Length: 166
Ligand code: SME
Image 1 (cartoon, rainbow, N blue to C red):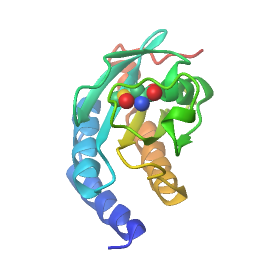
Image 2 (image 1 turned 90 degrees about the vertical axis):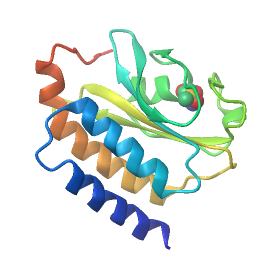
Image 3 (image 1 turned 135 degrees about the vertical axis):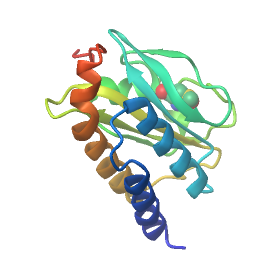
């Protein structure tokens, strides 16, 4: 199946599963499960949530992920600090990359911003294949994360978790 078609199908399933859902953790867990099982090039799929000065592990699928990542550190911390997607074809060439798993060769990290532009979380997808992600992955994941940020942003703030604003 063409990758963009698979993304559209996954998005349809996610939207249907999340219909009426208001809980952010339930949403993250569902998104991660659907994405991880839809694509062969996904070997680790998860969210890191924004804390005061660090990112804290959220729902994920794959082997153990690092529990906490300092703001600005590694690919995830850079995506959060710069509020911009990091598309990394070769993790060894990324300064400060955090090797939670030695098998990871490439990754994409997309920030989840609320309506005020605050970072709620980042979505991190790692692959054991080099250069596994391209602008098709980026387009669909950014679209999804934008939707999630706007939909769940207010919920996260009122739940007492203050998104970091560096
Ligand atoms: N790839 C990340 C670290 C997190 S894990 O690999 C699960 C990074 O460098 O930010």
